[in-house]
Image 1 (cartoon, one colour):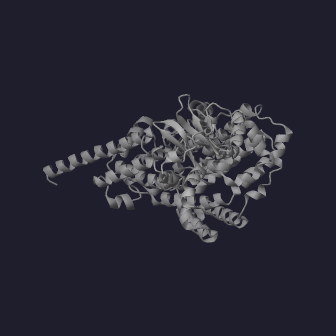
Image 2 (cartoon, one colour):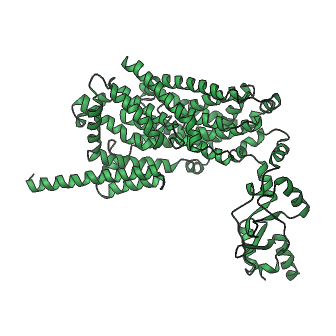
Amino acid sequence: MTPDVHAAATSSGALQYWLACAIFAASFVVIASEKIHKTKVAVFGGALVLGLGIISQEEAFHSIRLGIDHSVIFLLIGMMVIISILGRSGVFEWSAVKLAKVANGRPFPIMVLFLLFTAFFSALLDNVTTVLLFAPVTLLIADELEIDPIPFLIVEALASNIGGTATLIGDPPNLIIASRSGLGFMDFVVNLGPAVVVMLGSLVAVTWLLFRKRLVVDQARRQHILSMDESKLIRDPVLVRKSVGVLIFVVLGFATHGWTHIEPATIALLGASVLLLLSKLDPGKILAEVEWATIFFFGGLFILVGSVVKVGAISDLSRLVIDLTGPTESSMFTTSMVLLWFSGIVSAFLDNIPYVATMAPLVTEMAGTVLNGGPEHLTAEAMHQPVLMPVWWALALGSCLGGNGTPIGASANVVVLGIAERSGRKISFLKFMAYGMPVMLMTLLISTGYLYLRYYW
Amino acid sequence: MKVCDAMLETPMTTTPEETFRSLLPRQLASRQATAAVLDPEGRLVGVVGIHDILRKIVPLHVDLDRRLMDMLHEGYAEERLERLKDTCVADFMTRRLDTVAPDDFITKAVAIIVKRRRKTLPVVRDGKFLGMITRRSILERLGPALL
């Protein structure tokens, strides 16, 4: 290369570098401001870096490192189809009323059972759907018992964000981490599950301290719950059997990925297509319920993040993280702790999906530099080295649990606030924070202790 | 024919502050399905009809999930009405309104009533409420022309 050509190439590279950074930063700011819908911003940002040639169409559509991660996209679509059909079966409402009856119509045991049930289903389904399915039954139970539904709704949102942390499919940040790191469903369950169990136990203890004395009702009110006939909630028992059966097979498929090597997106698509075939429902109506705005948000976001990875900005950031936290081939303790708390605080105020979409490649670049002598030498084996594992878990714990800190930290919180407002009982930003922030800090402290005891002690 | 030719000039009216307990007997006695809600200056701020009252009986959880209607206990509607008795009209009136002007052709009122499935339409000039036009008042005026 002659000196002139080299200089031109360098200046064009610098221009692309700063253009990519500017578009990426501007998109983040506009998404955080919520002035324009995040899907519009991400898709426009993605199209702009494509249009300006910062990233090629080939890279955007076909490169796993730089472009749209189709395994995340199709896993999301597959699960959304399954959830849409499962939601129509009435099985959630049936289960919730059944639980209220198991609790003998007593409000505090109902709250604990709903908390645990929401957490369990949030680990298998997305948090928003779980909360959306549970909130109406919660309002029904509170109405019949003549008690305030707000503590129930807040506790369910918090439990849903904690429960979603436990699995690969529970919360979108985990999907992105799994795809970038190559970690499987059981890796998440085995490594994050124990921490989540401790957190849920602590949340039950907190609700006991806060609400047990407020939640007292007379026998006549409890009788309203006990006399409910939950069988009326199931209009199509065949659909229940089919959709629950498919969900069980899909979860078993995720859990046995280590042996079968069938990827999660393939399992979700298989489950979704089998359920569509079996359900006799109109595919047009079911597919219309897929959250296409979320899917396109992911698509745009992957291209945007790909552009800053390509120009080297993420590498520069990863070097900064390495300088600040000093990870070595033998220990990444400081990096894990900083990542856990930084992710928690950021995710309390910003959407954790774009945050993790940015941080996941940053961790892979950092791993390449520390473990393989440079990001360009990154190997798949490096992604699974024991020294790196706690860093991935710190990112997952921080970004998922941080969502509990504020009403805008997680979509489930936003949904609960919306439903509360419609019911005429507005939950203010500060009121939610009064519950959410201490729970967020509690769960981050538990995570700190868990990561230390399990991986560094 | 114009709207003013078929307009009820003495329709039922209420205020945003009137309670449900006071409005309901008046509404039942007047035999008018909809009352105009007026501010102290006589400007129209909403309408409240039998449908709005019935809607308040249906709880939000049934609105969100129709399956749950089978879970309500006997006597729920009566309890709900009892709880609502001190609710103000402002809390359950319809605020987004279709209105017509007295000089509009009657066809426009008919079109709105049919397309938007309304029973009544307030007649307004410069924000000031003048009267109400109903499906019955329109047919009472149009009917003789057909016979």
